[in-house]
Every structure is written in C-alpha cells, then in structure tokens.
Amino acid sequence: MLKAELQELIRNGENSGVALKRDTVQNYDLAKELVAFANFAGGVVLLGVEDDGTICGTTRADLEEWVMQLCRDKIDPPIIPYYEVLRDVEPGRHVAVVRALQGPDKPY
Image (cartoon, rainbow, N blue to C red):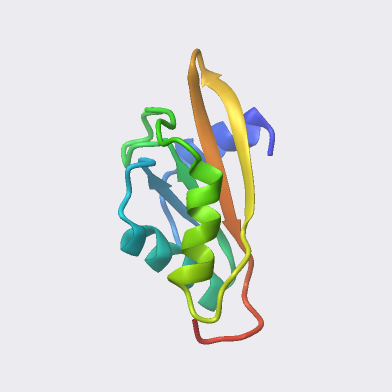
C-alpha cells in the first residue's frame, strides 16, 4: 500500500471495509474486526491510527508476530492476513496494515 492510499483510507474514516485501531487493542477486539471482514467482503485494519484519524504510530514489540498468533489461536478456522508496515507515515510514526480477505470457510 502506498502512503497516499493509506492517507485516503484514513481521511475517509471507518466503514464496512476499514477499521482504525491503536496497536494496544485487545486480542478480542482485533479478532472481532478481522472475523467480520473475513465473513463479509474482506477489509483492512490500520493499527497505529486513532478513531479520529490521528496517527499515533505503532509501539507494540513484535507486532506482526502478535497479529499472526492471534489469527491462528483466536479465530476458528484460522485466517492468514496480509501484513505490512508503512514506515514514517508521520515522522517517527509507523502504521501497520492488516488486510483480511473474504474467507472461503465461513462462518468464522
């Protein structure tokens, strides 16, 4: 994802395909968002972004590992999301993009 695409998603805010979350989100809340996307038409969770669109950045150590572990252990059947980090979206602040595709094994 390009930074311009990310900024457009943030500018448009949350909708049925985009969720904005701090990276301190609880396991259950992130799993709930990803399950909703997998059961519908897919979507993206932007970690490191406040609900109002402010970029707070990511702070959690081993964020990718935590997300992937959550998708294996907390979602049944497990999903494998696409994960990427956009660095320095604002100086020193990174945003993690977690994209869940529409799942073939519904319901999750």
